[in-house]
Length: 452
Image (cartoon, rainbow, N blue to C red):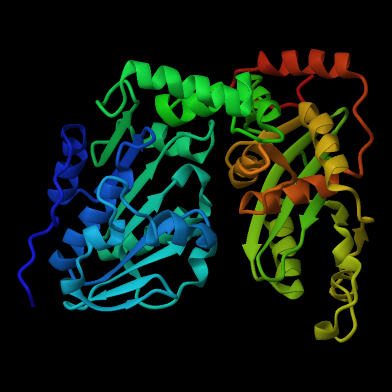
């Protein structure tokens, strides 16, 4: 093998040294909330190159979606050198093979490195990874870390999260949860903390963002990308403001199950991806979201067992089960039966909702959210989905897409839309506000929204 010094023809910038030193000294958990163009991927790629030759194993670089991984990492070119970033980090002399179709490199020492999507993390096969980079973590499926964390804990592997903020979602939660943990390296670097951009450059960037996206969206994008501000709403989010209000008003909190009330379920069905279920109680004018569950590739029998398990565990009394229109479609693979038919055969009667306009459903959810209380612990994944459900910006047409982006947040959001369409627009808002203010005064540990 040709002698190659790693990192190859690359030196960390001064502001990158604290993270680089932590990684080189064997740090297992790291979070870098760095501004745009700060070199997050450069650090992670060169660290992975070193790690792959220090310990033979499997290494993954995860993007939010597999579809974007090729453009963002595999084919990405360093504008300063004109060379592909992966060729700079992983010289050809160190490789046994390169499989472009799978975006996988096998090194001569037996290690492998692959670019994958966190949207299909649980379908990847092969040896379990010992090193993970979560790129653009704030846009990724937060369940990926919950799934992969025990693997790294067992094999003493490392994980590096690199991203800029996207509102107060799971990216903000991870940062705040570990920023004071001595076992983690956690750092937030804004464009004012580095030498990448001058003050004049930043002023021009803000101006251009506002020209491109309008005053408010432009400033939000600038503050996210360059000032690493967690408190700006996710750009293009349908319900970002409503979920921020829910947080500010204390409606994402402890919401106990009331045994005197029935529990309805709201569904989004997935055959090739996730099925999402909200568990809801109607308490006068309020809706209490007491639980949320999401499962991949589940058969009807498994979903019925899930309902029974939830019922027995929490002593629930079920009311109505609302499913989307596709639950009524007859399927050849199911002997000509629909999902609703199969649930009925298994003892569960579902109410299949008619197909509705997505935009109408989005509006209905927006009307309904001010009446909703969410159990913080049990509905975390669903709440994150509602916060992140968004429309994409079309760079060519300079407008937002008329349709929502289909990603990990779609499942919980579509399930919520299913339930929202069974409700009329809210009334009695004055009474709701009066009740809410009374609830917020109850600070005891045994808080109950049903207190008189």
